[in-house]
Image (cartoon, rainbow, N blue to C red; front, side, top):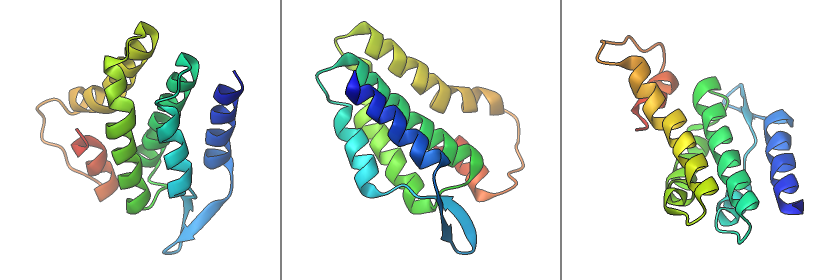
Length: 135
């Protein structure tokens, strides 16, 4: 659908587009409006649009956590959007949407916990620690 394509294009522009300078470091320029649009599309009537918007928020959140290319404010904004708009899609009546959400939940929450296991971990920086503590 057109909306699904637009969501994909928006996310690619946000990831590959210009970066902002934040305290001397280049950061992704993700605005509250961008996140708000993606959040609202998670409630769209079209299954493919809901899945695409949920994947977009998840991909941006992973990009922020794994690369450290986001400000703390942007990361918190994406975490809130993910927990309030993507996570509820687990209860979506469409199984394709619900199963995709379970995959994203596993990727963002479960896999980092399994990776750490019960081992004592030395964190190199705060963003790496936050990646694991999100759950």
